[in-house]
Structures are given as structure tokens and as C-alpha cells.
Image (cartoon, rainbow, N blue to C red; front, top):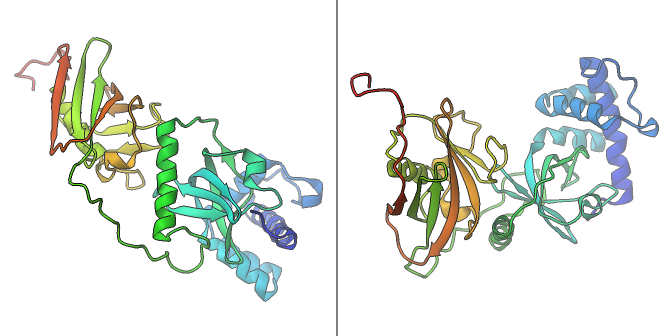
Length: 331
């Protein structure tokens, strides 16, 4: 679950002089002295320097030329240009390493610790992390500057993470190395059943106005957005977002309409069935980032019946006017 001791020592032998080179040349932390492992390093400053490095990976070649590294060490440092910064779910610990799931694209990585195991550092999963994965001798490690979020995952999310790991294991798509191409993926196996499970989701706009919407699991969050707006008689003329951790403007598990920046996860690309939702799970829906119409969503039922589109099966309360104070002529 960790590197061999000599490999961990080699990593730090390469890592600290590299950080010092970056800081001395680019003055990321101007008041910081020479970075030396034996004297200790402020973690916040080290992370600031590392973040600069990972966003300017061309600096790696500058350092290799400056340090005149031996061939093997130069190859290791050059390989760090394949870094994978991002948010990850630390899902489980195995003898071969610890399972990291990319929050962005659900790629599964097997990551080794340095001197300590991930379990020793962070306990059991699932844990949400900010981390940078880097290659090391055909293995995957991190740069050691990891941020863990104090976020508790409910049972539905935990089961969804397990399913992602199990599917990657079955399809043989777990990444044990960052070098080379992506692993070959097996074609997905379709279920033999002809039924399509559906959700009944209660969507509330305040306490006295809510709708129960039945929608198929194969439908996307984008389709759910259309269903919500139709049920509340709103025009679909603004951006929207879903926050699956039930916190508005959270960075984790947030999905946006297609007219947002390319770096955002798109609601129209995420089927409901891939979210691991279960009865009782809650999440937020935000419509119109100017007026901020805030809807509370809760899964009320899971049904084993096919739902081609969506339907409102219960409606309580009159919806508010989307543009209060505007009459028809103004519109």
C-alpha cells in the first residue's frame, strides 16, 4: 500500500529540490528561504508552490536541465508532466494501494502512499480529497499535499462509489499507472431485464408549493430540470445547476446547464441512474443565477416501471410568478 522505503526516499530527494527551484526562480513565496526537507516546510507555502508547478509543467524540463539529473531520475521528474490534479473520492484500501475515484470523470486509480498508508493518514473511506496524482516508476502516488474535506457521505453515495469501483474492476479499467494510453474498456453489458426503474422526486419551492415528479432513471439531470420548470410553469430561459450534496454552490457533485463554461460538469450528460440515488436522498436545484430560484429535491420512491418521459403525479400549491410585477405587455 506504500512505496518501498528506498523509493519513498528517492521521491523526496527529487521533490524538495524541485520545489526550491520553482520558488527561487519564479518567486511564488518570496519570503521563503531554501526548501530543505531536514528543516521542515510550511505545508501551505509548499502547496502554493506545487500548485504553480502543476499549472506550469514546462518548468519540469527547466529543472531537469538545471539539476543535471541522472537519466533514471530525469525520466521520473519528466513523467510528472502527466499529473492529474483534481477532486477524488478515496473509496477503499487494498493490498495493492488505495482506490481513488475521479470526481470529474469517475476514472478509478490505484494510488500508493509514500511512507504512510492512506488509511493511516485519513482513515477509512469514502473521503473527498483535493489531490494531485503523479506517476512514479509505473505506479501512481500523490505529491503529498492533500486536502481532505470534512464531508460525510450518505449511504446512497457510498453505494454509488462502490458500484463505480466494482464496474472498473470488472471492466479492467482501473489505472495502476499514468504512463501510456488509457486502459482498454470492455463494452458495457446491458441488463437482461426489459423494465426501467424510475424515481418519484418531491420538488419543493418553499413549504406550501411542491410537486411529485415521476421520471425514468435513464433520463438525465438536464431532463429533470425541464420537468421541474414545466411542473412549476417556468420558462426555461436561464442557467440551472444541481448540487447533489444538498449544498448550494458546492463544488462537489455539481452539474450545470450546457450554456455554462466548458470546465463544468453538464447536467445533460449525467443520467439519474448513475448518481446512486436512493429513497430519502436530498439535493438542491437552482434556476436563474440572478433571481436564484431555489428548489429542494428529495427522492420519495424507486419504482420498477418504465417511464418514457416524466409526469407530475401530485401537485400542491400554486407556483409563484416567475417574473412578479411584469404584465403581459411588458413581456
